[in-house]
Length: 126
Length: 110
Image 1 (tube, one colour):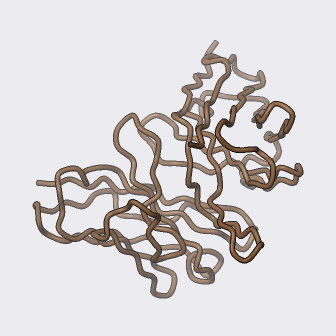
Image 2 (image 1 turned 135 degrees about the horizontal axis):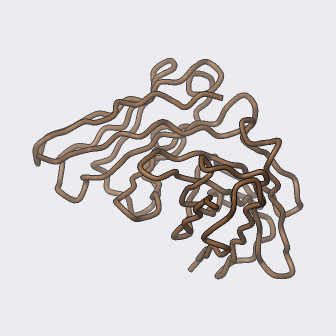
């Protein structure tokens, strides 16, 4: 079955760049949309952005100036970079896939996440 | 973009029905049929329960149902069970081609 696994440093210093990778198994990363979502301690979910396997992206306007999401189809991975981090960026970071289905040869994409990673905790602190 | 508005908490007794509201604007909930609902147990990743306002993914109990009226979407859980105790989040597509989540609702089964 499809599985996603986040990886990366658990501690990042203020003003530095947070870098995370999501490794996808059980399905090719091609022809799908892939998302990053985060959740600060004790708070709600925040959508960060998504990328299509071709490389096209959409970002949360509030984070857009600091975020880059990229994809590496050869490794079946996609990544998140968030620069100039501060304490407010401390959160559990999840990677996820947008839901989709095939109908009569056409691939339809939905606006919900059907498969999630387990999440990785990133703390911003000196 | 502003987060969708959900009540902070709701509660109900086993067997009862509860409804969680999710209020947005004409730029998100009010103008699109792309509202989804997620269940999250402590320390776990969210799980989709409803998508496109009122569709259940395979494997989700038919005790979960969704609806929408104007700028407000709703999730109803009938026949409440102890395992339903969790946090619930709504999400909507927006006119900026982005996604936005609600602030979350803690469901307590009394």
